[in-house]
Each structure stands twice: as structure tokens, then as C-alpha cells.
Amino acid sequence: MDRVNDLSALLTDEGQALLTALRDHSPAQELAIATRLRRDHPAELVSAALGQARLRQRAVAKFGAADAYRMYFTPNGVEQATRKSVAEYRARRFADLGVRTVADLCSGIGGDAIALARAGIRVLAVDRDPLTADVVRANAAALGLSGLIEVRCADVMEIDTAAYDAVFVDPARRGGRGRVFDPEAYSPPLSWAIDAARTRPYAALKIAPGIPHELVPGDFTAEWISDEGDVKEAVLWYGAQPPTGPAATGAGAPGKRPGTVTATLLPGARSLVGLGLPNPSVRPVGRYLYEPDGAVVRAHLVAEVARELDGGLIDETIAYITADEHRPTPYATAYEITDVLPFSLKKLKALLREREVGILTVKKRGSAVEPEELRRKVKPRGPNAATVFLTRVAGAPTVLIGRPA
Image 1 (cartoon, helix red, strand yellow):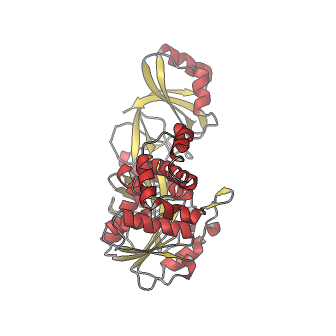
Image 2 (image 1 turned 90 degrees about the vertical axis):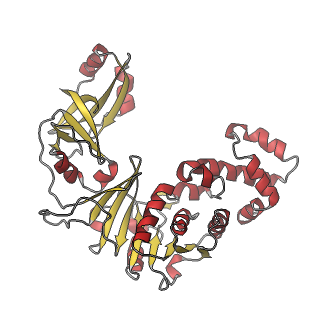
Image 3 (image 1 turned 45 degrees about the vertical axis):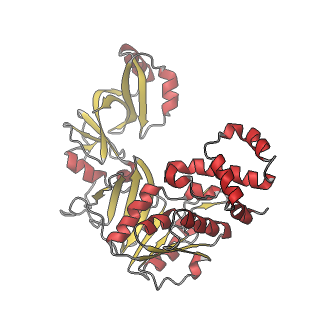
């Protein structure tokens, strides 16, 4: 049984029964389970079902159990698929723009196509891998969306998108040696995706969060998205204004265009729109330390948060904001600082022992010391909790001790 036919076998009544039986199986027991199932089913089908059941279990974290256990996956598809919450947010943005048809280029296993279809948008899902295209078809059928999702196995660079309101491009960012960091080494290259975007009224290009800001074209806006505190992706939008956020007013810094960069935090879709502010000034550590969300840091919007908090930086190269007052903000986590001391493992260990700190959270920015290494050396013991920040203050290695505000 070749790999393309693995999926068709799973779509039979026998394959479906096996997948149902394997839904909650323990991977640690797979050898025994496989031996038992092969008494009544072909060995190749059992292997395919076990592999798919394993992928479904992995996919629950991205898609939720209700969808994951009805869908089909490839190993790369699970790894590279957009998280459901992020795909739904992007689909809502497209729908709010009045988009009714989207060409989803490099669709993968169909995570974004599914979200777009559920938002009432007709989708052309294109992928050049035959098995992946079959998986998208199976997923559309399993979720009752076949009427809204057309699947085509083809090279996306040969697709005519003239009939569609918008294009969504999710280039492959992995090669034989792992992650690809050069946008021109994406498949297809970012330059091609940008040109394709400009042919339609609206477009969104999914890119790696670490993309240099200078690569964002002047006629696009860039959005960095985090979900539950984890940065998931960056998106280049064409033809779309930034999502609702603070008004982009005030004097911009030279070379920056207010409103072209956004950080969006999920769940809740809170969006911070860049104002083009200069970097905040450095000031002494105050009573509170704020750790900006990763999307805020990636979007270079720490200055916008600092202004909201009436704060400054502890170091010109470190994305920690300090302030004298506690002002809750969705864009940063606040900590009340109790101690500021020059970096010294000996002094830190003595202080933590004196305060009977056994529950220790270690964070770092601008320090070569790894959190686990510090934890091993200070050997925290006791009933109390504390958060330790390994960082720099005005260029000097420093330890800050505090607790969530």
C-alpha cells in the first residue's frame, strides 16, 4: 500500500472503525495493540490507522478534540498547520473586508481553508502534494464543508487567481535541513507571494515571526499574532487597514509609518497599532516591571506600551518596561519588584534561602545564564514563591526579584 492510498483505505468502513477504536489509544501500548488488530485486519491498514490516530492526538492542541478526531493529517501537516484560533481570527478579518472568495495557496492540510469556509467564504485550496490535496478533500467532507472548499493539486505559481476577491499564501518555511529563515528561500519565495498579492484587492501572506521589518513592503501592513502568550506567526496584509486598536495619532519617528505595524493578542483579538514612536528612555528600576507580550516585542511596539504605562526601559537593548504605578494592560504582564541586586549567584542563593523560596520562576533577557542552570545552583527550598529576572540594567548584569502584580 503506497502512501497516497493510505488515506483512501482509512476512508473505508473498515478504516473508519479502526480509527474510532484507536481514538484514545496509548502510544506506549501500540505494539500490543497492533499485534491484536492484525489478527482481523490487513497489517498495512493497521499501521496506517495507528499513524493517523497518533497524528490526531497531536492535532488536538491546535484544532481541539471535536475537529481533530474527525480530520486527517500528514506529519508535516500537523507541524505546519495554523492553529484553529489564529485561522478563525484571520478568516473574520477577511469576512469583515467583504471578501467572499479566497484562493488559499499552499493550503497544507486545510486548516485555514476550513476557517474561511466556516466564515461563509468560498475557498480554492491549492497544494502541489497529491496526498496533502487528498487530505484537504477528506477534511472538507468530514466537516461538512465540501460545498465551500474546492481542492486543486497544482503548483501555486501556475494558478490564475483573477476570479477571487483575495489570496492567502502560506509558503513552506521548512526544507530538508529544518527551518528556512531567508524569505526568498520560502516555497514559493516571498517576492513571488508579494507580487501575487498585488494582483487582487486583498491578500494575506503568512510569514515567520522573525522576518526583518525592513522587508515589509511599503504598501503592506504587518501583523504579529500571539495566542495565549506564544507568538504564532506574522502576516503581511495587502489592501486592509490595521484591525481596531489605539488611534494612530501623534508625531511619528523618522523612517516609521504610523499604523503599518500591529500586534494582535488572542484570545480576544486585542490589537495594538503602531504609532511610529521613538524608543523609550532608560530609567532606574521602579516598583513595577512589565514584560511585554512576544507579539509586541516582535512588532517593535514596546514604545507604545511604555507610553501607555508612563514607563521607561531598564536598558536600551532589553524589552522590559519599568514604572512606578501598576496599570493593568493586555499587552504586558506586570510584576512587583522587591529587590534589585548586581548579578551574584552567591547573594541570590542566600537571599532566596533566607526568604524560604521553593517555588521559583526564572525569566531572562540579555543574560547568558540559563534558567535551569540557575535553578540547579541556587537549589530553591521552602513554601514561598518568587520570580527572578536575569537581565541587564543600564548595561550592568542584574538580578531582579519580584512577584506577579
